[in-house]
Length: 102
Image: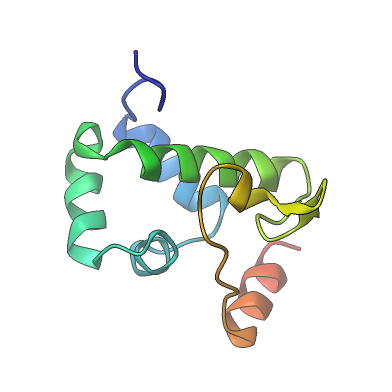
């Protein structure tokens, strides 16, 4: 096992996207990859590279603990603590995400 953890299974990827209420397009935008890449990962999650696995697993942990990955903790955004650049979603997407998760 490497620093990014064990390979991601199809069930884990599907579960994370579902729990975060993210479409493959949403995930692609947030991970800064193409939708085609996310679709390839959906067919074969073991092909997913380390930073994407770390990001998805971290985002779902934040979500389960009531934190947004853009939240600031200890002077740093949570996403920055795992080496990602925080890009705020457009207001309409933020509203859609939080309204659907209430």
